[in-house]
Length: 247
Ligand SMILES: NC(=O)c1ccc[n+]([C@@H]2O[C@H](COP(=O)([O-])OP(=O)(O)OC[C@H]3O[C@@H](n4cnc5c(N)ncnc54)[C@H](O)[C@@H]3O)[C@@H](O)[C@H]2O)c1
Image (cartoon, rainbow, N blue to C red; front, side, top):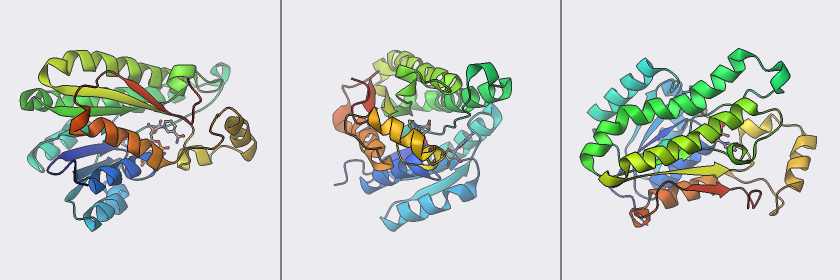
């Protein structure tokens, strides 16, 4: 099915993991893809796989935490391909540690990439979205932003902030037909969770009613749903994709 034909989707952190799965799901549904990651070369595989299903694809290097870098990336995107229909703010990191021992640098790095990154990228594209009077913005939050987690106060704060950001943007953009929603993934098998020990993974799995970690494709399917033209009447929502952890 080509529900997203003739649409341009920008995905940050698209070089691997969940971001790559999102880019490829949107490509499989007909969208042309702009893959954004720290370095252009990180996007090579995503671009090549999107092209393999017949889509146009561009690689853009940008650090979403830096305004100058984000502005330059958006300027490049608005020249070629020239418009954006779907923005997925996915780039994110963890720097875990108990609050007592957490450095200011680890706090700042997580807030700067996970929260300020979405602010900068969305802000740089706002004028274009409002002018075209249509669009989908989808922010990748986390169940940790809803539940909190010992050892992740920086990450939880960034994702809870991203949820508040999502709802405020949804209210600001609604009159122009631009929807803004968030996905809250639970524990998903990617390089980010590969860092966990088997003991930690077993403890997490015991908290998941569906008793298994999710896949990047599980998250990509939910993004696809919010991106569909048929989802025009859904905005300001947070959808957990978590095997039932939060209910
Ligand atoms: N894996 C999980 O279990 C899980 C759960 C909930 C939420 N999430 C969220 O999903 C998103 C993707 O996670 P993932 O597991 O695929 O992570 P990942 O580490 O596998 O991939 C993250 C990608 O973002 C890129 N990136 C990092 N910093 C960047 C920056 N400053 N500018 C541009 N790109 C940058 C990386 O280069 C990488 O390609 C993140 O926002 C994460 O918080 C993941």
